[in-house]
Length: 317
Picture 1 (spheres, rainbow, N blue to C red):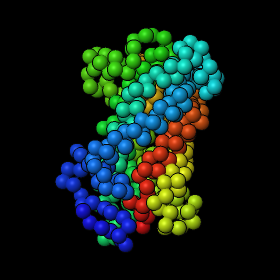
Picture 2: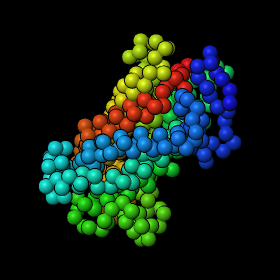
Picture 3: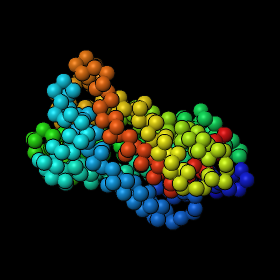
């Protein structure tokens, strides 16, 4: 372990096999204070899981709006999703598929920050500083890793459980049941439906958010270096970056949801065919369904991430 810069930031040497040990990457690299690895992992899971529980109804509404065809919509708006779901399934219906997302949020954080920290080490100078280009490429790489290792299977299960309830087919009693049945009928690759748009979404997400968060932080702190350890400033900057990135990644997210729906195999031959059909039948607006519902979870989760993973451990160059 080596100290960089004036001694305020600590950066690790690159692990021999860093992406295989994301939990250690987080505990030793991402956190400001040195903590026991188990404590760091629990901290990441707790924070990510808490934000999922608080914001999941909005994510549920977003997914429902994305799954429906705009040519013959079942829901007129986000409030309409809430009203009809609660009417048919009660309040618990708004949390359908939430359990897999709670676990996935923790896993996602481990892979994201573990990958980002190790990839960014290749772009840092002797003082630990990193350029905007290096930061963007590090974020892009982290997005790809989290998409492959955590996001795609988690989102597939969540979306299929949500779609099953929307269609009223009753194929799954919950997330666990869905995982077992998908693996039995389709094998492991059944959990990787919509992998391409998910990778594109997460890669763009992190490539945009990492440098944008730093720019937002600089803006709201007026360049005051002493505020780099302040969780409030980091949280606000992270929330701003999360909301901003949604506008550029919502099209990929909409295609992802369609590709992960229950009837996707019968409806689409692939990702490009899905996007083509959406455009031809429903127009450009089909790629921005659930935009408002997506902004709150993305902003709050990103803000939460940066509250306990302050940006002073990856200072701008």
